[in-house]
Amino acid sequence: MNTTTEDSELAVLVSLLQESICESANLKQLSRVWTEIGMNEAQRHERRERIVLHVNDLLEEMSSEELNLKMKLEESFESNKAELQDLCKQLSLKEEDVPSGSEMPLYQRESFVRGRVDALNKMKFDRKKRLKRIMEMESSMCTSLGEVSQLKAVYKSETVPSEEDLKSFRTRVEDLEFTLNERRSIFQDLCNKVSNIWAELEEEPHGYFSTAHKDKSPPLVLSTAEMCNIEEAYKQIVTAAARLEGSALEIREKIQSLWTRLNVPEEEQMAFNQAHLGHKPRVIAMLKEELDRLTELKKANMKLLICNTRTELHKAWDKCHYGDSQRREFLPAFSDDYRDDVLGDLESELDRVNGFYRDNEELFQKVEKRETMWTQYQELVAKSSDPKRLFSARGGQLLKDQQLQKQIKKDLGKLEKGLTAELKQWEEDCERYFIVQDSRYLDTIQSQWEQTGKQKQMEKEKRQIVKEEQTMMEMTYGSKPITPLKKIMKRPAASPLTMPAKMRKVGQSPCVSATSNSVRSLNRPPRSTSRVTRTAKTPLYTPQKRSAMLKARRVLKDKNSQLPPPDPTSESFISQISHINASLASAGTYTDFQKGASSQPRSSVVPRTSSRTDFT
Image: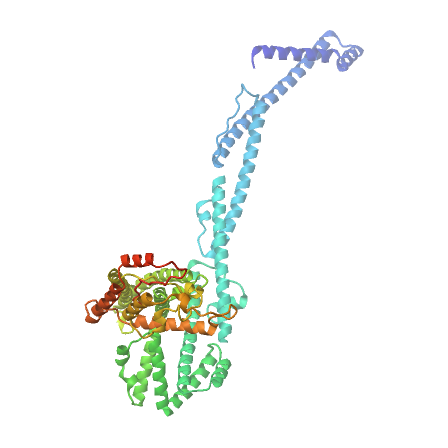
């Protein structure tokens, strides 16, 4: 504080003292008492000096107290300031700025620093409290999980964690809680499964899960090693149950095989199976008794058993697609001996084939599926090359067949791709070929596609040859337009006079028929002279006659189609052609015909001349 401030403060105090003394009743009373007592001036002066001394002592005492207060405030400020800096370091906070004396008086500075220290101490206490709770939770969970507490090893009771540390500790506690709950859930699930297995086997709980089964609660420690022991114990129980189930299944298969061979009635089989369900030890004992009984019957019915075993063996061979050579390799299947060793060989072979089918059942199913799809594909290909389908297909059947063929070919390609990869892997693992019907199935697939390609090529070449022969015939003898059947049906019924000559003379050859038609057309009288008059109401031909005529035409067409094509180099063909040329020459030229037509009178009916030669 500067001098001016001190002087003004002193003036204020003096002024206050003067006013207080002047207005003080005590001083007046002292002066009155002194007067009444009769004190002289010296005594009065002495007492005035004493009053001044008392006032100075009081001022000195007050000054000392105020100095002490200032020192305490300064000490408190410094200590709180140091504690504030230390708390900032402990709480991992940024060091705070403390106001200086020029910015704030000592009392306010001390009060500000003290308030900040109290706030940080509260934060410190809160963090340590949270840390303690987290450490207790982490310690409890580590004990349940059989692990060592990491927080106790890292942090001591005096350490104050940061907010990031508390967050990471909380995350660890959550992870431990999740792991603990997961292990408890796994343990409870395994306990339930084991309880079900014991219930199925009609056994009392024993071993590792017996205590948990009785208490209905997991053990206190679920460490990693303990969980491995629990899972191992569960696997042992499951393995034992599976062993019993496999033993029961094996005995049932043997019993079923003996039932089949001994021709045991199905009613008796069903009754026994219904009375002995499951794979409990009691059931397995009953199954063994039945197997022993059937074994004794087997010895008494050796011939019947051998015959039935051979039948089963052939069925097993059929499932595995064995060929004749593969079957002939096993001689006991075709011998006439009925000895015990033959039956043993048959049973061993049957077990081997059945085991081979079970091990490769998926492959055999895919092979059968592929064979079925291949048969469908071949049928559709053959159907698509049949020309008769064009007349019998209705309702878009051709399009449906074509789409089905494409789809089957696509699915067949996908199936063969996967099957080929599996067969190659199987052959690599087993170091032998996968045989189907005495041949390697991979080679069979390839050969079938090659054969299909060759067949298509042969059909294509055959059609090309037929087309070339037809073209050569048309170039040599000319082509004849074929009238569709619908137009033939629309024509009016023909009379015997208008009926074609080839329908009246069915047995003649094409060449003779053509010659006779040509000659007859030239010598035929006009139709008007030979037309029979009839009434308009009576039809010329009844439907029965018309049907007979159409049938005769079809018969003639079939016979002509069966005749071999004429050989241009044969003597009979040359003579027939010469006869036709001579007949045409006797008819005259077109100039003679034109002269005759111009010389004769015109008529409304002109005889029809046919210059067409028909070789059909």
